[in-house]
Every structure is written in structure tokens, then in C-alpha cells.
Length: 313
Image (cartoon, rainbow, N blue to C red):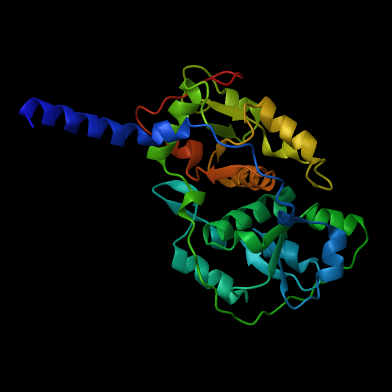
């Protein structure tokens, strides 16, 4: 083979390697799978199953006081702070796997059985716990309590103030690294979402509309190619925060540019609001990942483009 032919072959190979992630992101996929109904349980379901030996209920909260003042009978206290750390100046990042493993073992979460989650801030804390379990390979057996403690109390169901002292259990991490995406990957996916009409990827900003829109001439706004659905807008109401009906949820996301069958990356400021969007989109059947460092990292990164305005660009 002539030298010039070898050079051409080498260059072509490098170009294919570099562009392959972008090409894959632009390829069509089948329509979204059916709703993952097992990810959400009702208060009626929990009332019937809360005493089952293979069901563990976790009350996820920043403040122990809210647990001590009244929790669902049998629920174990999980401090939200144990699921979060600050890394490279970015708050609310996932801690090391060994640390998370110790947290769930201490709570008596073994490798089998259902894990039902509820907690503070209209389900936000519970959604973060779900993402954590999904990352650790146990998301398939975890579910959120629809409406949370708010709905449970509104229905005049029993609560208790006596804390639960769980027995430790062996918890085996089975990592799913694809749950969380990093900056370099998000750069590529953002470019595809913004520039490829038939892109098979969509970015979803879970922050309030005014944060998404940003202010011109400042490092505020949103990632190119991202749509906006404020996570609170997926709830029926704040007082009893059940998810809206499936058809309404699908319409919200599709209006924001999320199409059936797309890979979706959620983000917010530090990954918390995006955790709820992650849960909701996965519940609807989407292939979803979380950009955990979110806008806090993106806005500090030199050369990372930011778009202002209410329109998806």
C-alpha cells in the first residue's frame, strides 16, 4: 500500500472514531417503551404492603425533625445529606460508591425486596434517593410513594413518632455508570440536540422558566438544544404532590421537544431538580441520564456555550 493511501486510511479511521458518538446519537430508535408502572406506588398499595417482610420504606429528609414529628409506620430514616457530597466546588454530587454502600447497609437494605421512597420537598428528596439506587444497580426494585407523606396524612392514615432501628444487611453495588453523564459527553450531546434535526437525543432543563431563560450578557440561561419543563409542573399540586396523569406528562415533555424514543439528559443547577425529572421521564419509559454537575459546572466551564431566551435553541 502506498504511503498516501495509508495516511488517508489513518485519517478516515480517526474521523470515524471521533464522530461515532455523534452519529449514534443521531440514529433513529423505536418509540418509547411503555410506562414503568412499578416505579410508582399508591398510598393504598403501601397501606396493604407496609408490613410485608420484603418491603422497606425510607423517609428521606434533610432534617431529622420531620421524621421524628411523624412518619409512616415502619419507615426508616435516611438523611439526604448522606447521599450528597461536594466535588470540585460543585454541590450535591454522588459520593463514592463505598460510602453509599455503607449508608444502605446501615439502613438494612439488602439485595432483595422492594424499597419504597418518600420524603421532603414534594418528592424531590425521594427522587434523589431513587437516582442513587438506580446508579447502584437497584433502581429496578425501588419506587416512589405517589403523593408522599403529604397524601398519606391528608387521608388520615396512621403515622408514628417512634424511630425504627434497622438491622444491617449486605448491600451489593452493581454500578450503572450510564445513569450519570459527564461534561465532555454532554458537550457532544448538546451539539447534536441543537444542530441535528433528526437527533435521537434531547436535553431537558428542570429549573424554573426564568432560570432557563437567563439574562443576556451574563453566564445564565440554558444549554444549547435543551427544552424546559420545571419539575414542579409535573405534579398535580404541591399540597398532595402526586404526579399528573400520564397523558399530561407526555404532552408537557413533548411540547418541550422531547420525542418518543429519544435518549434524554436531564440537568438543573446542581442535579437535585433534575433527579425528579430523571425519575419522571424514566417512569414514562424514556432512556434517561442525569448530568449531575449540571449548570453549576457548565456555567463555569470556559468555552461552554449558553443560550438565553425562552425558546429552545
